[in-house]
Length: 139
Image 1 (cartoon, rainbow, N blue to C red):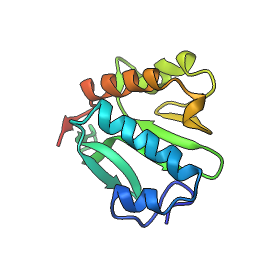
Image 2 (cartoon, one colour; image 1 turned 135 degrees about the horizontal axis):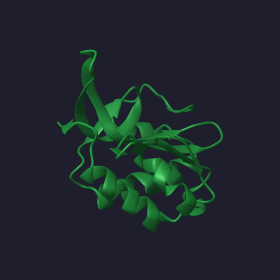
Image 3 (spheres, rainbow, N blue to C red; image 1 turned 180 degrees about the vertical axis):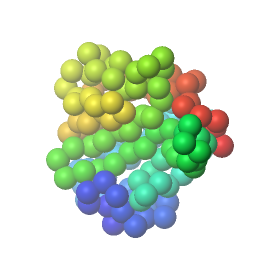
Image 4 (cartoon, one colour; image 1 turned 90 degrees about the vertical axis):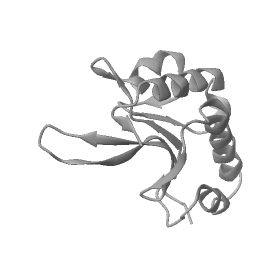
């Protein structure tokens, strides 16, 4: 069941089914937007959150691993869309803040209450750009 972002769900469908309405419909719409916009990003589950497009990272320290390029989470007061791409020296999500005025945008996270609060065409553009600029090697 998903209540505060993370869950014990093993699949996207299980995660979405575990949400109460209206949040279930909101996250399903966002999931469908991601799948339609960047179908090349394979679905994955990371720490109980639906993800899309795994990539491999390696830090200068030698630490390495795999992570999702895009992830969704249903939190108590908002929906989170995590986008881990970096273009130049800036997280990609940050560069879309002005174009998503009803969203709270952090370094790699776009937070909003309802999908209708954001321009889905702008989210689609963000997703396409993220897919074109993964921070590591897509797995």
